[in-house]
Length: 164
Image 1 (tube, rainbow, N blue to C red):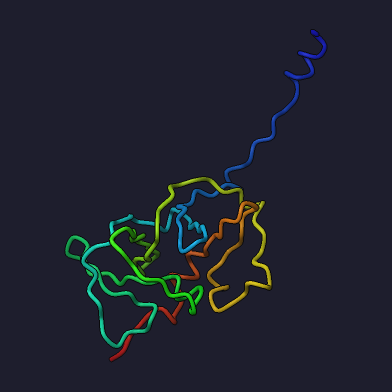
Image 2 (cartoon, rainbow, N blue to C red):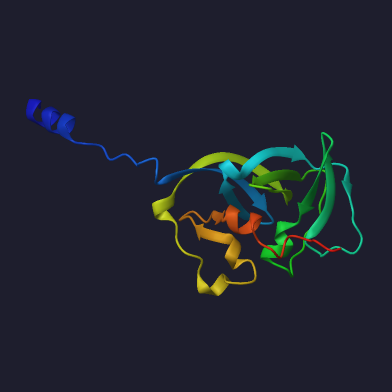
């Protein structure tokens, strides 16, 4: 028993390096679970007082006043799956994302919380689900969470509406 105890105590446990782990905010969007790097999430707000803006693309849900600051709110579902545009309700949450000068909110069905994802376990997006929103997807975890590429979303010139 002493020999076995000695062997067990000498075994080195493998720990993931912090480079392989990513803290994400996980949320539901339709029936699927998504996650986004928490460093790009500035806050989560209840869905309220959304002002519709006529003449904007279908992915723009409207504008929201957050403590005197006006931000755009995007329906991410219409970017990822254009044929499955969902409606919003008071149960939805707004996940406010920010990177450099770009900031906007995305409508989520439910915030599930934060968790750490093992980046080494990510699979690439299968060719069968590559669609117009595939550029926004970083990968898929073994348990089916779709990790979004926040930089891709926040720097996409197609999302920026700049009409003069």
